[in-house]
Image 1 (cartoon, rainbow, N blue to C red):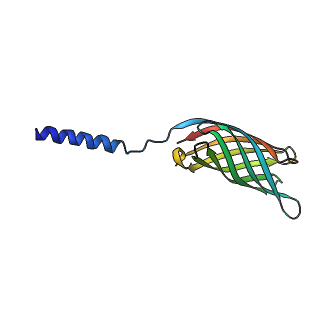
Image 2 (image 1 turned 135 degrees about the vertical axis):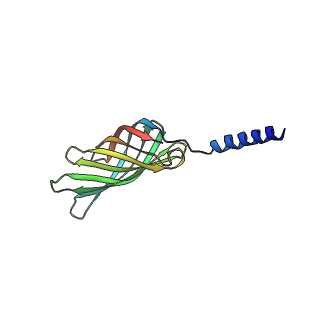
Image 3 (image 1 turned 60 degrees about the vertical axis):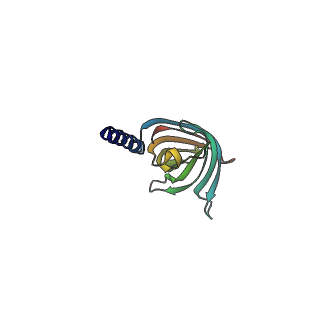
Length: 155
């Protein structure tokens, strides 16, 4: 009888411990669509040096989302404006998904395109990784933008 009790106790402890092991991240498709307004930042000479976007939309794994962040534009030796920065997507339930921005802005066409790199978050996105290709069309007069991104996310 004591032996049977020890075996049951051992099985219960093993089951409880297995429940505390975190599940490994799974790669999943990711798609995002949204709109918003960007505040363009210029230097004293009128050159574009950055932007502060705010917007909303829908995305897989997020549902309805809002975004906030900051983008810097840096000209390279060829006169191309490189876009870089950090932003946060906030899901309807409050979970946050952090990402880095790496792109190229064509100021004449008003199009920024490149990659978003996921670098963690909160809630279900804690430790998230992955990347997407993105395209942002910006209206330089109104500051309005349309955003589309497609890629993979691991969480």
